Image (cartoon, rainbow, N blue to C red; front, side, top):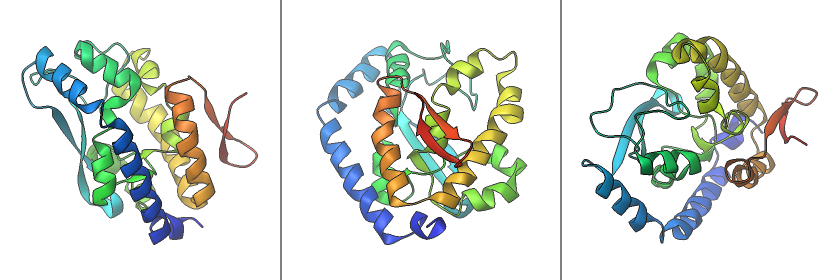
Length: 219
């Protein structure tokens, strides 16, 4: 189905239903997260990061704030990042910081499943590849997000995290994102949504099957 599914009405309906259901389930947690953030450090509840979205349109990716407002700016967060507050480290570890993005899905800026939105600097370096990748809406979760669920740990072990990301991780993430765009469809998206808690909560691994160029749960 590829791009036809990625930009179609059926995917949009699936996004709205899934995002609304997850927001309803998460609702009891939200007051506790907000209170913990406010008690630990002064500043806004949310952090907005400018990213490049569907058809190169800039979007704000909204997350619960994980760092003090005066933390040094960097496009990457590594495992054990000293900038993280205590609640921020918990939110990063559990991926609960991503919950506000469900509103972006309802609004139509993002999808539940799709390529992860990237910063403008990295998109500009590979504009031709991103012309294909950004032919669908970026997603909260997706093939790349699951395969590189341990990205923060990989970055933490690198001597130069930014160079390692730009030269090693990013090219492979773009390859996987393009595979997703070519193979996008309802069955693959449902698999990703089912696998996401298995990866983020239970530590299962997802790999790209070299024979089929599709993700699968590692045994």
